[in-house]
Image (cartoon, rainbow, N blue to C red; front, side, top):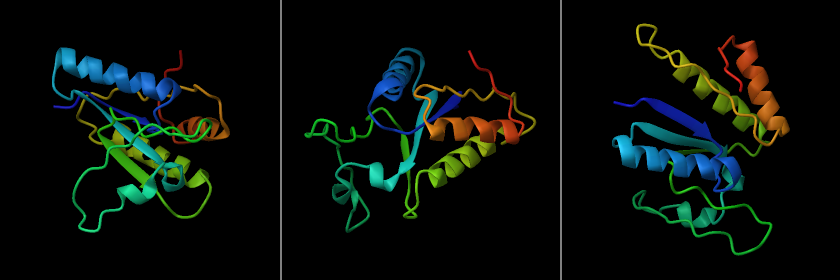
Length: 145
């Protein structure tokens, strides 16, 4: 039984890193994987991409922290799922994919009690604002605190 699914960019930095730790601690304290983390991010953001490509389509790859200061952070190890969008476009495509997933999840089954969608505008990037705009366009209930 899954209580919640949190959708992030999956990078081990800032609020996403804190959310990953909080979800891990919650699941450890109250039950096994009651909350899951799904990362949706551009393939080009993934450090050490070549290590993730598997010739036999099996196995795991641990992501070490970045060695170069100022480079992209590694993937957050507390996430359950990663969806890496690769279409050689800018991150606008990722925003669209993430918003569609969030929309689908918010409307899965009308008979189930619905948890409100929650949008956290942490960094205030254009991608974050675009996601918020899509929520409003699609008439998804938002609780902003």
